[in-house]
Length: 569
Ligand SMILES: Cc1ncc(C[n+]2csc(CCOP(=O)(O)OP(=O)(O)O)c2C)c(N)n1
Ligand SMILES: [Mg+2]
Image (cartoon, rainbow, N blue to C red; front, side):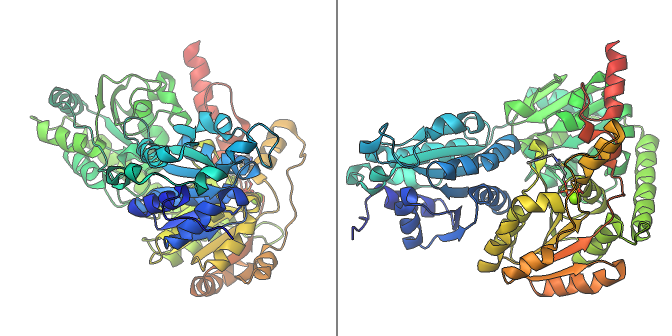
């Protein structure tokens, strides 16, 4: 039996993670990474052992987002890394900081046809901020320090980073002189202060607008107070996106989520706060935003001027910039208050109508409940402090409108369905005092369904609600509508509750709306738990109606696509 010394690279990795406040690592074991695995355990860092590496990366992603700590995934060589790649790609597009550690065959076996031998760094380079193989033991600590800085966005955009180590390197000692305390110590997160002249220009532009609109994104996270302060000063309507839900409470008079299409078409100045003008915002096209001028604030280049240049662009920390704008303002805003009040009133009316309609949404001819009945029952039971993870096609679309949680996670701009169960497990471990609910389509659930086993073994107090409509239904609707034929998009109404019970999870199948409240209460009382709820496949979501699944040529939504066609002439 060979023991690992306290100064070997694997020990140094474990000490480094400990010093950086990492209390949990998500992974799947393998010989190539065994030294790290064992030393992490020796360092009393928890290991959440999963059933597929992809789930480990999803979990590390969500855990990092919710705790503010570095998310860490540990996967083995070869298929361990390739399985992890979808999770890495998702974190890459979501700009989520993440450290992925892996192994490669020992150096003496390099290029000789070793077991599980692939050039991982080539595979992941385009979906990471930084991807390196660390062969030299004396450089291990330095490499870890730099990788984490890059993940957190010190000198670039935050996102996933990747390091792998030959197994013999992991067992080799780092010379004492190179175990430098400065590389173990956590670094304060850098913030970029705004330029005072730009603040004055931004304040003047906003104050001169009669129909200003504020839209937040990833970069606004952590800036809730400053965002509310700016909205209170300006009185402007406000839209969040999936990346920033919950930053401004739904009760705030600026929130006009239900008037999204209208306000985007009417605004004369649009302020984006840490938000890309991507497909969800019509690429900022004049065809959709009309003659609006833009004011853009971001601390990463990709959120600062993508697709549309701002009349004013401020490259700086979002919270400090929002505060600075309010402080730099010398005049009262010229906003058309009637317009803003009108939008809010229409928003409230729509929300009330929707709530009522959800509770009474009719079943189909076969008596299968409408997905909105399920979502209304969930919303009633979980309160406003819950974390909701939504996943699927039509069902994600229904959930986006129907639920109003303080924290929201979803497949994000990669459209990476399947994240639901792993995100939910990690969220429930990260925030054990909050109610964590996964609301997922049956198709989306299938990708990582095996992780119910991980939830049970790790007592992750998550509730998983599977909306079982026996199909990849948003694709079915598109096929019916566009091609008049349904091909390869139907599933069976499988018994997902029986599957979950096989792993020792509390699980029930629910077929009638009137049975929901009690079943939800039992699930909340017996976590982890799963409810397999049969819903009608006939309900057509707004994402179906707006043509998202059809993928138009110029824009993500059919109406925007038409407007863009017309505008281009
Ligand atoms: C990994 C991945 N595969 C396929 C898709 C395409 N896709 C988007 S939504 C969807 C259907 C999801 O079905 P389900 O989760 O059952 O939700 P439903 O539409 O039935 O409510 C599919 C196949 C995707 N976005 N991501
Ligand atoms: Mg489905």
